[in-house]
Amino acid sequence: MPTCPAPVRPLDPAAAAELTTAAAELLAEHGSATSPELLAALPDACARLGSTVRQALRPVDTADGLFVLRGLHLDDTELGSTPGHWSTAGDAGAVWDVVLLLVSTLMGAPIAWDGQQDGRFVHNIVPSPGHENEQTGASSGVLLTPHTEDAFHPGRAHLLLLCCMRNHDNIATTAASIRRTALARADAEQLRRPVVPILPDDAYEEARQFAGRPAPVPTLFDTPEGPTMRFDPAYTPLDEADDAWRGAYRRLEEELARVSVAVSLAPGDVLVVDNDIVVHGRVPFTARYDGTDRWLKRASVRVTGRPTRPAAEADEHGYGQAALLAFS
Image (tube, rainbow, N blue to C red; front, side, top):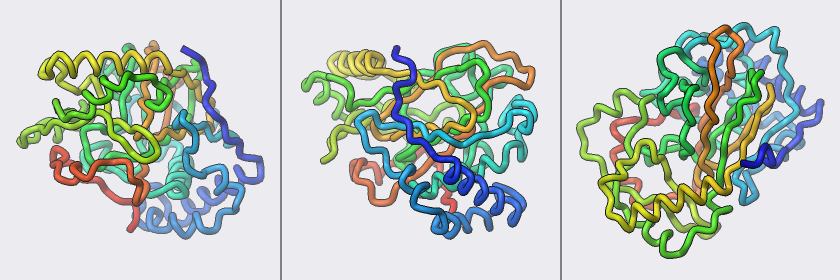
């Protein structure tokens, strides 16, 4: 797997300082990164940011479907220990929550989920004891299977943002774009069929107990700009599919593995992933639980009017999960 050939968009020191200063001022004014008043103030704060920041945060514009925003710097000694669980993170690294919210708002509209991490708009992704072998962000000892974020839901994010707080062990995030694959036409036709559902992952306890019948969904879609996908093999009941579809799905997995890249983020880096065309995962690692483990912050973004989803998704129940909007 190639290591870190991801496109990099540099922020010069002045632009980086502008962004972090705006975040610090918002946090000082409103007291908490979770404040409804701070969330409502994001669009106006973004409107005051200069053209250099805006240019760096233009839409994802290559077939790779991702880029690394680089140039933000954080002091590891000021962070404190890596939390042992998202629920104990509290306000740790709060100014970086606001930085990520500003970046999200420049690119679209931040969203949260009522059933995940208490409805927070910025999630803390840390390894947690007892979750080592799960297919969630809290795992460590297993490969986090490449997937599109929240693939079970019709209102899933268009963009996924991962901000690196700490990564002493250079643990890589994996990524692969459907637009870099060479999938056979016959396989693509199979995967446009809605054959099996995608189920909620283990991070959504309430959604996993939803009483509604899961509906089959297509894996691939056609758009004027190229193919998009909805993909999460760890939560897709593949054994319920027919042989032809299952074979095509397996070959898609193989193609995504072939074009996969490994991106090792440094503190302050923000990885921006187009969730319509890129699957992401993470290599296994051994967590120490000593306060120095890998720590990311995650935000999800919707882009209004983006024509990448089939109209039929509007009829899905989303397993009872409602997306929350940072502002209207």
